[in-house]
Image (cartoon, rainbow, N blue to C red; front, side, top):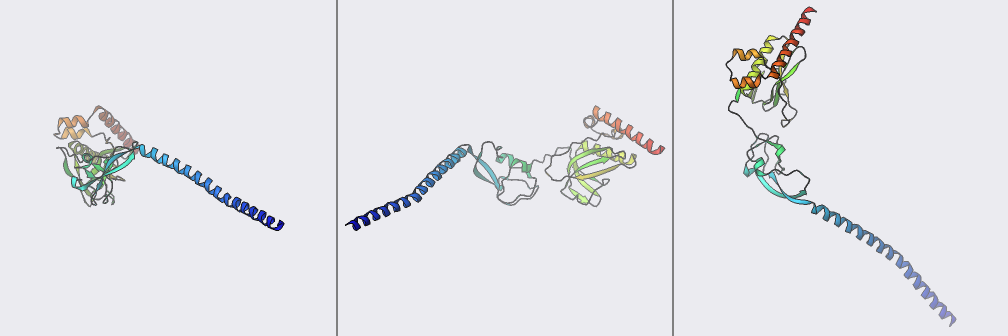
Length: 264
C-alpha cells in the first residue's frame, strides 16, 4: 500500500510540475499578445488621427506623353481624387492648366501642377527679329532661352533683353521675339558695340527653361532716340531718370577707362 501511495504522490507531483512548465510559455505568450495588442491599438489610433487630418482633393493627370511647349487641352487631362494633408498647397484646377503650355517634357499619367505650365502672352508690339551681332556659343539652339547682355571693356555688364526664346538659329545669328522697347534697347547696344572697342554683346543660356527671368538693367544709349522716330511712350519708359543717371555714369567710366588706357 505504501508503494501505491508513493506512486500516486509521484504522479501528482509530476502532473503539477508539468502544469507549471506548460503555464510558463502560455503566460509569456499571453503577455506578448497583450503588449502587441496594445501596440496595435496605438497604431490604429495614430492612423485614425492622421486620416482625420486629411481631406479629399482633386488632381489632374496627363492622358498621354506631351512635349515641352505643347498646349494643354481639356481632353489631355484625367481628373483623380486623392486624400492629402491640409497643409499641402491647393492643387491646380482645370482652369489653371487648360490653354497653357508645358515648361518641360511630361510623361503619360504624370500629375500636372501650376508650376509646370506657363501662359504665353504676346502683346501687339511684339515682332520677330533676327540679330547677327551677338556672340553665341554652340549650346544655344532653337528652343533655348537666353538673356542678351552687353559687357564693356572696363568690366561693366548689363542685361539688354531677358528670357528670350530662340525661334531660329542660323550659324552666327538668332531670331527672337522682341517688343518695341527691346528693339530700342538692342539698337542702343549695337551703337555701343560699334562705339567702344572691346565691347561685346552676347547671349547667355538659362540652365532650365522654367527659371524666373532676370531683369533688364541696361542704361540705353540716348543717341538712338535722337536718330529714330520712336513711340514717345516707349522712349519715356526706356529713358527714365534713373536710366539717364546710370548712362551718364557709364559714359564717364568708359571715358576714364579709355583715357587711362591711352595714357599707358
